[in-house]
Length: 225
Image 1 (cartoon, rainbow, N blue to C red):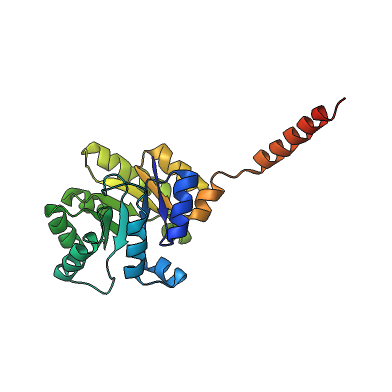
Image 2: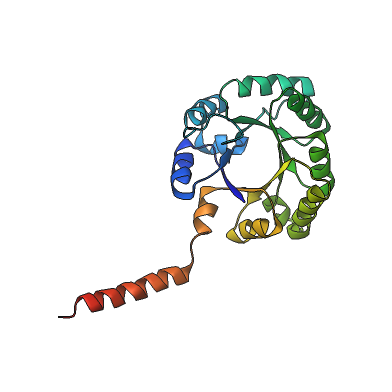
């Protein structure tokens, strides 16, 4: 399973690539508000931080279209501008009727798309049928309202396998190492999460305890005459 970093901060991207060997990046408007940068600035920064990769096949960087755009023609127009800014860019499009029309047309043009804000099995099915490169079913937001995301994700994975769809599943809005590991167990292609979640996923208090225990033993032996 591939790891994508969910961030618009180029410094986090650089660190995550070094520490975790991330395979790609996803961004969204909320992240822009957090770091206080317009998307045009982030696009330039991320476009320059490709780590030697020269295509979206090697290192996809998903950039979301302006959420104010509701017509497929306008979405397509902006998408074409985004991909001109760098070879690694994939266009994130919301899972609406107009968004799906745009995604299908863009894929026909050779522009790779990531259909996002997916919250149901039927939405995920529609995305795969139109041939999008990625689908992003959200987990965290559904969990906030007590929904069972395990069966939801498992069903999407199994449906895609049943029909050999090429669309890759990006499990999104991941907020814990458990969900990250569950996504891998189910057979999802990709998980995208924040740097904090990525760091927490490799932490365990027993590791710290064991390291202290072994350090004390090591130092005791080294102190022997």
